[in-house]
Length: 140
Image (cartoon, rainbow, N blue to C red):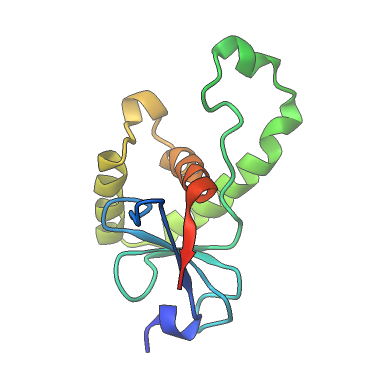
């Protein structure tokens, strides 16, 4: 049985029923499965999640700010974001080469650009997921 079935995941879709990334859906476990635990998040292409992590994505506190505004933020503004990014990075590191290639292509199609966003893709992805969740709806 697939992990999504075992963990009874719910899928998050955008306002127009769009995926979180091209070819990928964002899911959350409602009960423990074989791998996913209740409230774990996953990015799924089909059946079982390609990546699983436990902390809800958090928006980058610097998103949309000028350098001057960023510099004025208190240092503790970043703690929650950094913790979420670290958790997501661990999940991304656990995926295989093929999964990474597909996810990278999908992120690029959704707007990720290493020259603009840097090479730590988990920062961009965490922010992207958090922004997506602000308007997403649960589809069971």
